[in-house]
Amino acid sequence: MPQISNNCMHLGLRVRDYQATMAFYYDAMGFEEVFTLTMRDFYETMSNSEDGKNIQRTKPDDAVWLTYLRIKDEQYLEIFPVDPEEIIPADPRASFFHFSLQVDDIYEAVIQLKEKGVTVYNLHIDALENHPAPEPFKAVTGRCGSRLAWIKDPDGNLIEVMELTKNSMQRKLDGR
Image (cartoon, rainbow, N blue to C red):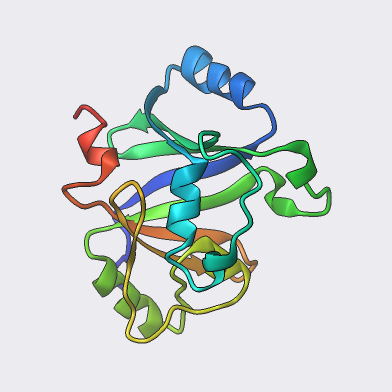
């Protein structure tokens, strides 16, 4: 059976203490910071989803949404700071958020996934709310310039399917 992905691109972590986490992964582990996106980027990205049009702005636009740290080559750790009130003790996503699989062609990957009976979503918020992507599928381009789709495993763990484009920040700002 052909493999759908060629790389586990990143692991996304929701963290309580952004500064301590950055110090650990940047200083202690030696991972390089590639880029940081702000909540302004989050709000603009969420507006690409039907469910995201009514997202309530709860944080300042200039607050950190996520930071990409390079592990090696095109493998990253994605850090999402969360406020204490966002942590729900019974929510298993309090730390683990998602992992990302890199694909060469998002549209071909979506076709293959759907052929295998996998439900495809435009954004993570759509996956969490069980709102499948409309037909025909049209990939959302994230603020980082990559094309996105989301799926869930049988336990509901979020998986981001990502195609890096020549304009993806992961490539342009990675310095490689």
